[in-house]
Length: 180
Length: 355
Image (tube, rainbow over all chains, first blue to last red; front, side, top):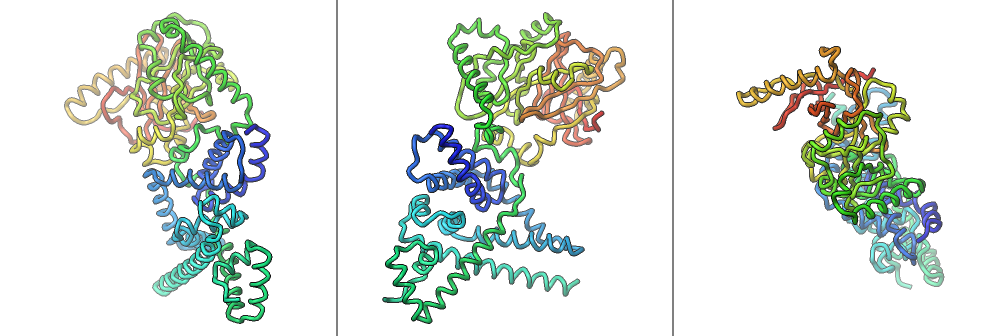
């Protein structure tokens, strides 16, 4: 692949790929790094049949490989620990309350997405970036016919899990308010 | 038509069905209340899941420790590498030159002054270690040089190009930097040339020396020093700043005390050598960062012989003086940290405000 082709690919898909990876990983810098490596690998290809699905598949595999490393897991645990700490921080004024609320929502969203099965999560995140069923199937090596079922399951579970977590969090905060 | 399953409804709402099937489902839903309810529910799940997923976008940068973020790519500047054709050309030049030098007879190569620019093609830390000159050789070279440092940018070491692991080596004034601390202490750094110092206007300042060393890949870093680096995610970057040099304090134990006593004596001598006109004044060490490389600058030393050179690691700076002596400076993580481990440490560099 020559530089022009890479530049075109980059302009088209860099933003959605980074967003997909950011949602997948929870860290923009890491997402950028993985995206860069993905485009580097694309540069080594003569031609890509299905560019978008190829990019998302390679990025997904890179993340999967990286996730196997213990160091990553430790860092992730540190991040989760920080989020938990954020969770218990009590807001003092309105701004802080809003910030805390957004932080709580984000934390719950992250937990709910992480609670999905890997295949469901990836299919959903790819769909959110506009990949069609054929592209998702190619990237995840699934049959096109199974994507509808995968997405419906992912959406249902994500929504139900998130709402359950929200209700639980609200109940906890109510108890805390009563105690104070 | 039989009732469509939930997956088919989602595929229909996502526009993934063929026209014929889509029309059939549309007609069925119009007449089947049960399926209409399922479609309404599916629409709700689609909207809700999109909203939940979008909440993930408000994530901070630098969540991952810098050291752990990098394994995927082969260098800090890889992010914009294609926007820097000059960098790519420099890398290609270094590869070509290094390859050419590698096939030359070894004795001739070992006499070559060397530099490798930041962002140059990666070499393994082991390869760097293999190319390090004996200290005595460096000292001899140091004594023979009295001119301002000139970086031999047009030459390159017979570096062995390895895989994507990153390592850089720099030599100032024709002297190669030595990895005097063991490689397992090297967790961050890159090479910089003295021309960069000149560009920053440092040439007019009291003393500048420095340089160098290598960068291993994040993988190598993580394997090399997981305890010291991973436990403090921002450690490498946190080193940037100014440090007051103070003689290393004593540590407990008879053997250690004996060692430290000698160390203190050497530290005093080294301090005097650094600033013979005002031996009581402790020099200041300043660590800056440029394109992923640390640069060390030494201020407040009246002995400004440019033949001096240093080797830097994140935690240790070796200052080789013009008379051949070497002092070792440990960068303290905080103002209370004492030297630990084996090996002589002459000074503890404690953080201070930059002048």
